[in-house]
Image (cartoon, rainbow, N blue to C red; front, side):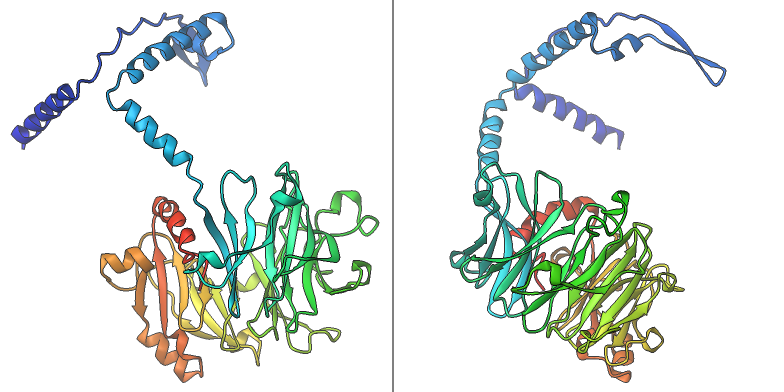
Length: 439
């Protein structure tokens, strides 16, 4: 073993010599100016504390000398010119990237970012395989030539005819909701101010026929003290073609000051789910608005902050899927039929286990989840793990689901276990292929 290490060192030194690396200039000696400081009764001597005063002339002179020595060495590296040329070409690339893809019948809404434009653009595609089908719905760079107007988020109507877009200016994230025709990008006269703010974000969900939208709303001046105008988020309903002064209150008066509301509509538009976070503490409550939700008292509370339901998603089989931490710190998945929206009637379909479940996404044929990099439900081949995560057949979960009348698509669960670094490396690839956001 020692011989091998010795040979490795010799070969490495020889290889570096063959590369013709330049020799570094002799290192100038750094003056020592000892300073003694007492910490918790212990005296610590620091001979280089003087270098912390970067505004002093002698410190600037020392830094300049170090930079000059480093620059001379780097400029003589034989491969530096080629590396600089390659990096310059890469940074100058203007190929677009795509994110936040949302599907509607025959149409895909997606955010497209293409340098050197300052802001991403909202476009539609007929297919992820046909980028030539792109149509621009809204380009904030055209609205604001300075590039200071940004799209906070967008929500297309269920038929894809209209799209609601929150726009904010100057990095304020104080969003105003605008409405556009998806086919030609024509702006509708409707606007709603202060639907989005950094204190709680913002959200919206269309009704079934696209004639109106539920949205998050912050207090208007006079409704709350000045200090509370960016808190106490509530949900209102807006009917297209009417002024926002006629919008009707829906839910939220009893929510906490720091409530953060996320709205989600079912695929058929019959249900609206409101997930309410109690600030950033990790506690959530969930409310469901049914088909007769326009009637007074139409919202029904499904979970409370104390129920330890950390996430809820509407499925395509008229069911609500819940990520529970109650007696399951690593997470378990419950299924609740929308016809009987009471937490006591939820059925466990994915039991708690070794892996930690952090998120869930129900689709037509599967239930997707993700968690931290360690642990998996069963051993799988590395290529499959790399591409899609652990594909696991939950035979026991399938039996439970079928026994309790759940749909076939809850019979398997895909968990992605990747390190943070791997996530960052793969994210660009997934966004470019529109696979990361599309289900």
